Length: 405
Image 1 (tube, rainbow, N blue to C red):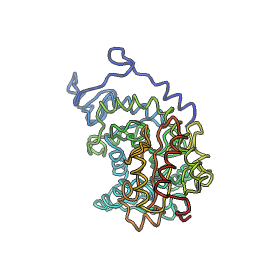
Image 2 (cartoon, helix red, strand yellow):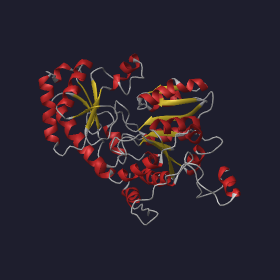
Image 3 (tube, rainbow, N blue to C red):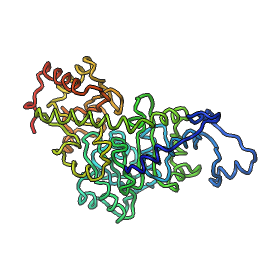
């Protein structure tokens, strides 16, 4: 993301109804009209600036949507009650019965389950591929393919997508590239690299306080309006619109995202380097040993670092569970799913956020039993955190030579 785009987000200002420095929250489920014709025109989608029903949108949602569009550099954005609400709406808006999706093999478990299982009801099938190989991606495209789907930095293996190259490939076949940018807000701006639609789980880094669930779709005005169409809009008809109170809360937290992402990245880089020096198998895009390190460097905004996620293999699920339980006891962080919190969160993705993926597929993609995913927090003394984790490892006799490389 360029500094110009960052400044556009910083320059957004909204006055509250009574002059407050925070915009007023629209605490209404429905909105009045001064004429019956205006109501009719609004249902037909021919009225700008009029609100119909909060499932369609609300002033609070539009404030947040404008801020997210500025964040990603898109024309506009819609907000949803969850990341999966955003993801499922986009997929069903772009695909009809009998269509085909080319998706990265390493994606969030909920997205995998939706593409693998749920859309089969509509005869939509998905090819899960290694999206770091453009040749493999292209070979998977056929006459029924309606989109390429990937994550900027994948969950949980932290593979880095070459978004510019994938966008070029998508345009060659006249299909959209849809990118989930949840793991790398500010660090990567997919729309600037050619992505057509950018998705976020706002639950994570963007909100940053682990107190709500929300999602967003950033794209063209035409596409975002299609999602809200009263007759054919998946977002509108699925009923997954975000509550106004939560939209207002997320908008406030979004203002500190640039500061938080810098700290998340700094702390994650420190821990990744230290544990790699110790001989552990660590995966972090900021390490030169990471296969996508150079790709990440080419497309990232260096001001915000390589992100707050890293993984480390401790050889077995038994060891991983014991270490996570002890780290929680020692107040290093929480054994919990999700990410982007001020405290470090850790989980074994094979038995949690990626458990929807069959074991044989997990092994094929390199998701081992002993893999721990860390969402590194905003610790003020990261050196102390490192020593505390090392002490937990020592107590459990977890050593680098236990892990086969």
